[in-house]
Length: 286
Image (cartoon, rainbow, N blue to C red):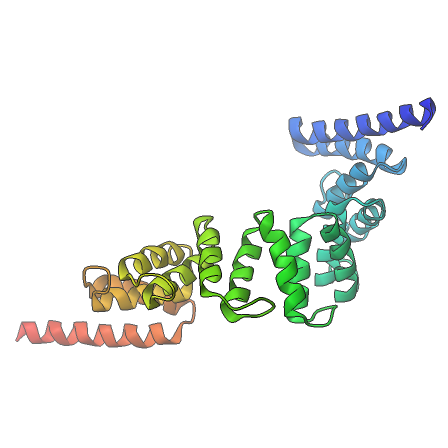
């Protein structure tokens, strides 16, 4: 790179940084308009990060009229230069058919490029595509491979999905121990379905010491986030006094929350408890 090219590259970096500065420090429409002006100048001269940022502005309609078409135009330029953030976004837009004709094949194409560049989001999404046979031939082995890659980088959903692979023996050797360890890791990071599964392992004593106390602890965490099965199971625990002090009042609370999300068994238990409550009330009044 000669001095002129180096100076031009530095100018592009400066313009992009100025754009970011306007977004972070400025307020209101004018700050985004100023940012777009800076991003556009650098993007027109081939700066991939500026192209990506300009795409974000069009995507969100900040500083420019909202346009998925223009967002994709600039992300495509950045993606072709190897910017994995742009590759990931293109994958999402092709997968969901936003601003383009839906194409799982195109989504896989861009996610694979980003995944090979080490992007955990792309690795996870590629794993999902292999798991469902979307844009690629269904392969549990490939799904587990990409979930593992993303999980190594701490991607919580990938950690959970890899746990499912181990529990079901899909793409990997079946192992409740590995499944539990992965669920527990995801559960500690707040993944509600993983929290439910950890509770289930404790409830069943599946490769861990059976403990209703631990089951309730994890189902409580999941239920508070809206996990329907955890809400129903908590209702059962309170109705029967498993790991908690028996309380039909609290059982009704959890059955009610689960039933509001369409859990049919919770609806049935709620009706039964309400009938019992009315019968008890009537009996006590006699």
